[in-house]
Length: 240
Ligand code: UDP
Image (cartoon, rainbow, N blue to C red; front, side, top):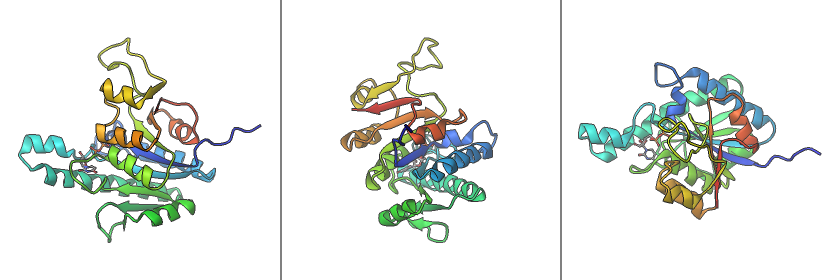
């Protein structure tokens, strides 16, 4: 018979770096359109999709604080604002192909987007709308990976799908070591003890504590986003 869909509600994390693609500017419209059309296809199958967007293509708080003398909190607020820019870009792209999409920000910017309201986000998802969570957690010293883990737990999504520019997690840096192997599966403990730089420690332990599996996969391969959302094997699966 037909394979039932494994996931009913997913949290897709798109890093800023992935959004940049090979475009000279910060955002590659080919990438946002690819995300939009693959997400469109799966929402038509009834899978609920929430998205957390990073901001590293525009501004990373920690590195700016280091080189400029900005205090870390100010730098991080700028970083969070960068995620709002990416989120609005992605929302506009989604809506241009007819996917109803809401942006909810972790701190108020009510002329631009809704504030984050958990129950309202869930209601949007139930109605088949895509919800983009912007501005990370709303707190400096955190990351959008942590925001992805947090929102995933809050809205009872079943998995964090981390879209990156690499095929998954390797046992060594594939850019430096040509014999590095792509790992099919990994445990949370392996991620933290081997320092595999999958996500920061706060994000991965939040997933572990709440039993949220994480799939790390390559967004630049056509079809991968919809495969990941449909629960087909792609990239590296992290669990207990
Ligand atoms: N940020 C933050 N708190 C959060 C999420 C993000 O302060 O909860 C800031 C932080 O400065 C970070 C920037 O926003 O460097 C962009 O987010 P991130 O680096 O996680 O984006 P990605 O690496 O996914 O592109």
